[in-house]
Length: 276
Image (cartoon, rainbow, N blue to C red; front, side, top):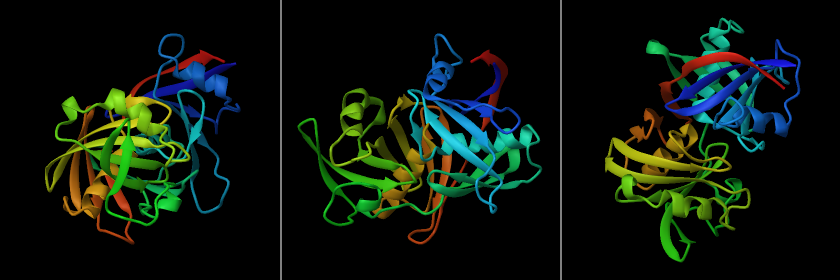
């Protein structure tokens, strides 16, 4: 079968988007791995599937697969690409779109200058719900990684994140610490690992080692989690520019009881078909 796809990226975090509404096809792990392979397939960090919703109060179902075939709960950069895709493909005429994910319902809004604004929902800070093994919720948690003690933040944006403070992201030990922290036993579902450098109260720099993927040029949920951790710890204002290797996102969080709002670009690269 020839499967139609669109290659997209959000600040360099790249995706293969597959429309499973107009195409009848069931994606399996070996299909995901073929699509994501940068040598023998299309190449991407994650594969995104556009599906018919399973509930009446949303417009679409949005599914996210890591390059190695596993399904994950949420992806902020992917959400922006999803919104751009369904509008550009005329699957909807709405400017505000409600989408179901494994992490729950999110709301996507097409903004000016081809930006997309995403209501990412409320962050989860209770350790058991992240999930993260800790006695009680705290601003900082001591975490032993590779023989070194870190004071970290822990947040779920529908997927688990640990935020490590560093003096300079350019010299941060992402390749060394990232894969060790990702599989830390205190995170039973593994974890996305963010390395955060605070520039001032309105700006941070961030690198993210993503669970099941490795370091990416940008991570939307990682940007949200880092901003939330910095706000909880008292370092940041409620609107933060997050500078990632692939570009910048704007993150706003008014505090407990409020959703995190992420604004950033989504770009189409090319379209094609692949034999599956």
